[in-house]
Image (tube, rainbow, N blue to C red; front, side):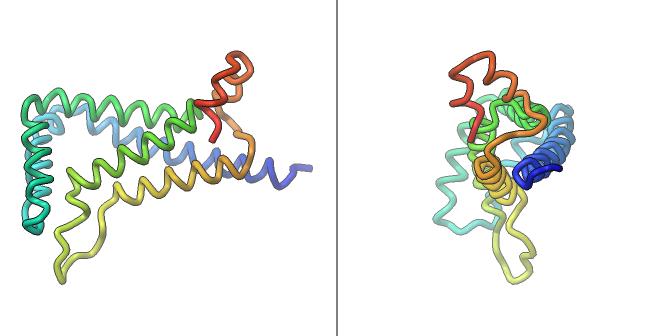
Length: 169
């Protein structure tokens, strides 16, 4: 008989892996030349129509990223690939969930333009903020379950004593 705790852990693992598959697809798109070539246009277009008080924020990011847009596009692809791998294999979960949530918020506040501009015809707030919520939820659910199924962290924690600090929420 499977306990409720084990059942919860398995369901969380299924959610984590499914989310990892989604991030894998997204990461694959980030490795294309079309993403690298349009990276700055995507960042710049997020600023269009935003309220005036947000213009300094977008100007900061377009200036910073404009120094080497291909480098930042490649770094984005690397980070998204690492997030996908961490989710798929249950590797460094604590670090991955928090880091990925912060990365998602960064994407939401820059390339997605806070999900705006908000007008009478606006229909959603952007996807990256929802990703951040899912990462925070995974963190909380993993913490609630107490153990992780199908996670490399279980193996690593047995071999390296300090790994628990990186792995377990």
